[in-house]
Length: 242
Image (cartoon, rainbow, N blue to C red; front, side):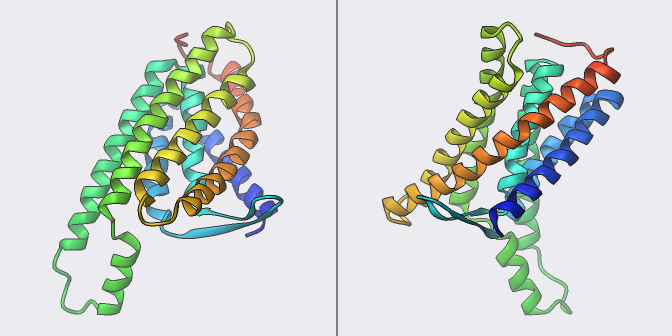
């Protein structure tokens, strides 16, 4: 995967999520909260695949989990929820996402332990376990990083909204997201891989993933404006909590 292809997939994903957010403005905020929870679960499942984005000057080959785009998009969703519906809805989304991940983890563990039908091949079972097998340390790292970074994003967005008196949407969107994603990346990789890889490898992994998330955060700003403008056009009956 080259950088231009990565940007294309980011834009496509953000576009789909923004469209869903606009539908939520028309048919109910529960749609946005539901898709947020789904994104967090999907990100953890597809993260098992490692992608190569391409060479970036001074950083070399940038790699990351396949779920990086999906997960980074969740920060756009909480920012849209916070801007249009208020902080409490952002908090509800984070809690819903956490609950969805716990249910998903328990369900996957049950499926892995369940006695398979006698006609299921060992090759299929090994593939199933290889993809969905959950290392406890990875799960713990993911949950801790998620809870801290997503909560920070909700509160940081509203902190900057108050400080700017509701102006400079682009600033609070990026300020909250970029810092939250740094927190998420550092916590997750440190807990998941400390003692497994050398410190320089861990720092390289943190830098690489954070660069990808910065790219996504920068690209999502226009989509934030599209969602807010759509609300002003078709969703004026939605109550906003400042």
